[in-house]
Every structure is written in structure tokens, then in C-alpha cells.
Amino acid sequence: MSGNKVTTFGEIMMRLSPPGFLRFGQARSFDVIYGGGEANVAVSLANFGVPVDYVTRLPNNDLGEACIQFLRQYGVGVDKIIRGGERLGVYFLEMGAEQRASKVIYDRAGSALATIERGMINWKEDVFVDANWFHWTGITPAISAGAADVCLEAVKAAKEMGTTISCDMNYRAKLWKWGKQPGEVMSELVGYCDVAIGNEEDADKVFGVKAPQVDVTKGKVEADKYRFVCEELAKRFSNLKTIAITLRGSISASHNTWSGSLWHQGTFYTGPTFDIAHIVDRVGAGDAFAGGLIHGLRAYEGDPQQALNFAIAASCLKHSVLGDFNMVTVAEVEKLMAGDTSGRVSR
Image 1: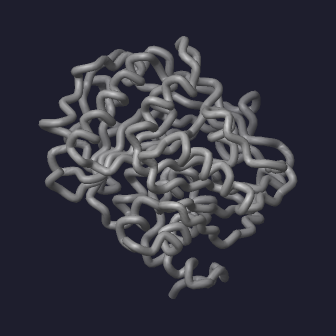
Image 2: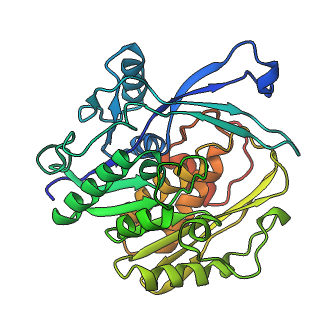
């Protein structure tokens, strides 16, 4: 470990959405942007002034190039992206509103990352030479056996090099189709991690660890109920030093409460709760939390409460930003942390 970069690894996709709040059946055109869990984290970190590289595999065509240009404009390092494969992954997003939920349709089978194989990425001698933090999510091993193999290759190399490893458990039921159960694959991978992040359901769906007496559909999620989840995960994975849970209470598709909790080396922290009454775009909010937490743990070293508060505030702001990426600055996050929720024009 010789540098201070964060490296993230996963699949970036073309996101196609009907304009505004049109339903798929009404669409006659689609808005195009690019996004994906680990790319979203990379952009958040770049916006916070953190040097960051994003690693993926993209087809050697104009769409692959468009992804690279899209990332480059936000200051994300793209030099370690490899090229190959037949196609770019795609996902379709129908934006929900009020009592109508959002919908996602994946079209990523056979994508460049889905067909990746061991040995295609030189983790030790190329990717991690100037990195001291590696972030991945549970989406990547869900894509294919090959993607899971390469993710395992990455965490093993990172661990050998003394690199801090974080994961977002990110359970996606629609993706785990290639043969193995999520818990089987994720248990080995999380065994290498120092930091684990999840939402109120991930630990239950992946590892069967469920918070007692919780119903996220009631619009209120009690942070202290997740102390049990964190402690159970810490027992199962003795390497974990830090475990964070995002807490979303769903009143409607347009109105959520948002908070988080953090277990750090035996101490449990809870953060503020924000009432988000008009959601612009909630896709990527968990990634915004992960990016905020990584920055917070590095910037407020020795102060887990501040790290948690930064992550919650950063991801709260993401709900006001259209697209997958959280286009906010440290100053904007710290302003919200300090209690300014007015949204007044800054002149």
C-alpha cells in the first residue's frame, strides 16, 4: 500500500428513463445517462476531492467510450478500465411518484463485465499500486460467476497489500441467477472486508440477519433496532471494524424519511433523521451514503459520529439530484450537517 487513492470496481451501465414521470408504456423516447453502484461512489468521492480510480470492463465501441468520457468529466480516474466484451449493460428506470413505486428492468446479460474472467485485471501490479482503499458492492458478484471470481481475486489482492476494503452488501434479487446462493458467495467476500454497509434489508436477504420488530413500510425506522444486526454481523465476520446501516422509512415513492446507524469497534452510533417530502431521484442514494462514509471515515478519523453524520447528510442531498451521481460538495454537505435545512438560494 503506497498511495492514498480509493479504487472502486463494478459495472457501469446505460440508464434509460422515460422523460419525467412517464410510464414505460407511455414512452416514445428515453433519457440517457450512465451509472452503476461503484461508479456512483467514485463520482461522490471525486466531488469531495478524494483521488479515485474506477475499474470496470467496457466494450471497445462508441458506447464504451461514452462511459469513459462521462466519468472523466467528473474527475474520476479511468486509466485502469479494461476494454473487451460484446456489449454495455443497460437498465431501464421508470420513475415512481406518490403511491406508485419506481420500476427497474435490467438488460445486462452477456455484458462486458458479465463475461469478465480471472486474470484480465492486474490488481497487484497495476490497480492497487497507488491505492489505500478498495470499494466493491454485492451487485458485482451477483452479475455472473466470472464477475464473482474477479471480485474475489480483487479482495484477496487488496488484503495482501494491506488495503482497507469496504463493501456495500446491495442485494439485488433480479440478478442472482447464475447458480450460487448470495449468502454462499458473499460470506467469502465479506470475510476480507474491514467496512460493511447495507440498507435495512440487505443483511436479512443475504445473511439471514433480521432486525427485530421492524416494518420499513410504516414510514419510520428505529435506528437502535439495527444494533442487533450490526452485532450479529460483527460476530460472523470478525475482521469487520465498521458496519453501517442506511435507514429508509417509506411513506410513499415521493416521501421518505432517511437516517443511518454505525457500529464501530463495539460502539453503536445513530445519526439524524431527515424528512424528505419531495424526492427528485432516489436512485444512487445508498451509493451516496457509501461515498460519504468512506470520505467521512478518512476525513474525520477518530470521530465515527461525524463520519456517520456526513454520510447521512450527503445521501439526503442525493434525493434532490436527478441521475445516479450525487453532485454535491463537501461544503454543501457540511452546511446541512450544521443544521441548515432551509434550501434558501445561495447568492
